[in-house]
Amino acid sequence: MLELGESAPSFREPLALLRACHQRILRHCDTLERIPAHLASVGVDVQAVEAATRILRYFDEAGPAHHADEEQQLFPWLRSQPACAKDVQEVLHELSKEHRQLEKTWHDLATDLRQLVATRRYSNLRWEPFVSLSRRHVQIENDDIYPLAERLLDPQTAADLGAAMAARRSAEE
Image (cartoon, rainbow, N blue to C red; front, side):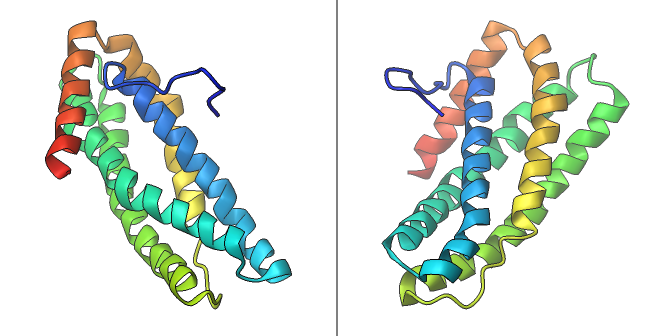
């Protein structure tokens, strides 16, 4: 979590920005795990609706951009590096496939969250497997992929990756 006075990473630091996204993903996963118990004990209150709305906004907007940052910038650049071994290439391929799985599980969960927000009623919340898959996915990227990228990334490439990430967001607005 950011402390007061601490700034979020910028596009000049693309890997730090991606790691910050991972921190937010994990915090939202923690919230998703707590929502069912909250709903069971107090029902659909303002806190539940606000939490669901924040989660929807984050994963509807930032989630696709984060996947695109990795699949269109980071992963292709890593694959092009001589130091990117065959086993890492395979992990990158699997991570891209997992993005599709995450998108599918997010679609199901988002449907439930939208219903909760719209109707102020709780019937179902398919937070699993989205949460467990997200956590595992983030851990692999944080532990295996990002450290390799940090070792190989030079300042000019970092600037190029960050600029492409920023440009994509500008084009989407």
